[in-house]
Length: 82
Image (spheres, rainbow, N blue to C red):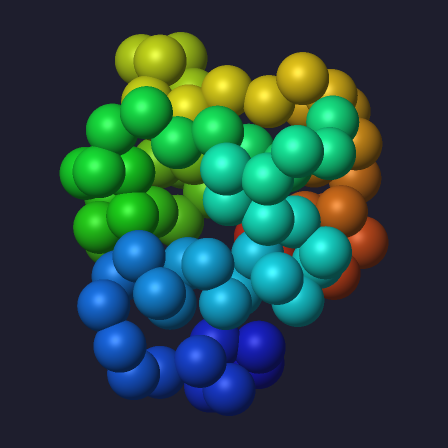
């Protein structure tokens, strides 16, 4: 499991490292990089996984110019199983 490689640090660092495995940068400049607007995003994702990812998107906690490319990278790298 990918998460076993990323087990220490703040929730922000853990999520940042996890997304980096899929070539996704938080607050990066590429269309598939996500822009986080609410700090609680990180803890919520650690607690509730992919459900929280969708719910936090709908709540406006983060956005992405090319959400299809973001989701493709998440799925291709099995991040949804972490």
